Length: 422
Image 1 (cartoon, one colour):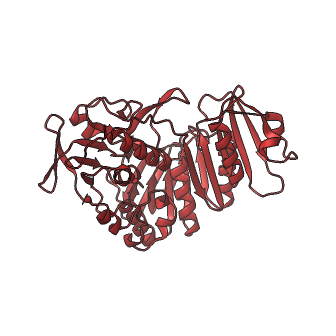
Image 2 (tube, one colour):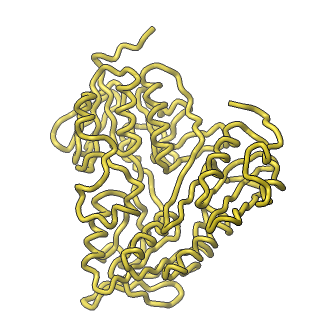
Image 3 (cartoon, one colour):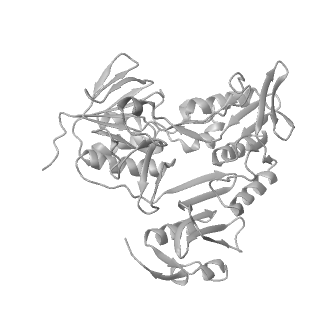
């Protein structure tokens, strides 16, 4: 029997990639009732990945690229409640109280509340005006202003993960004098193998960025003469601007008020339903079980947000849909495009293939025994496309041929055989 939605309301809290796409997917898949999209950010929902890249060089927030034009929300009859927060929530009465004095009664509720930057308890960090994180358009504008007003353009980036390195690259291209402090013994320690980390360290060093691994920020001091960051290496680094990029924490306060189960985010089942009836969670905040990798995870990626938005819309409309999409990510730094597909956690073997006829072009293939888990492709779209296809089809790849750059990079020359085709 077709689900009747004409007199129903779906409320979505969080209007980034997950929330905004969920609203559009609900309409696309047949939701006829009201849709209310709520977000504390007053800007029209916009693309987030450029925050650490192109957006840093913009002159005003009007240039932030919207996910959908304002007219599209009007055409789809989606109510935008922007610059508004949820002050109270009741799962029994299915009611949200908003900071503008209004309330929303919902039949289905989607929590797409995302994550916030984690700010470590470094002495002086809370009182220093030159310290920034980068999660929103407001953050990007503050960094722009701080950089513009910086006297010597000395930048200290705390954290050598992707967000820290992308921002370091962007500010260096704007003539910033950038130092990256990474507490681990190498860059990207939690997310990439040593070979990839070494490549990016050499890349940034060649561009003039100072990389300090095995060094944490010990304290931050702001005086009338300027700001300094003292590292655990005993060195004092001058800083007109400090950027903190050491990870995020899921925004689960609203979910806690509703009584949902929490575990490194909002725990959901295979259909993205929380432990509370009619309440779903998607995007950065959702902790879900991935059947391919057989583990619980919380993914921070546009792909995950968009694919979960599509799946949860179907489930809200009564079309049972289990979420099992293959994860993929990307990072842009200088002239380098890194494309990643799959998750390398638990790999037992890796193969590095370098394309000798192209500069800065290689790929890293991760295997668990003979099963291909993931591929990291540097300036190599072909490797990304082939890797995606091989993983989806459970294709067995010949590792020896893969490692030999003299052998053509084609499916027929690399495949052993397929064990299953989706």
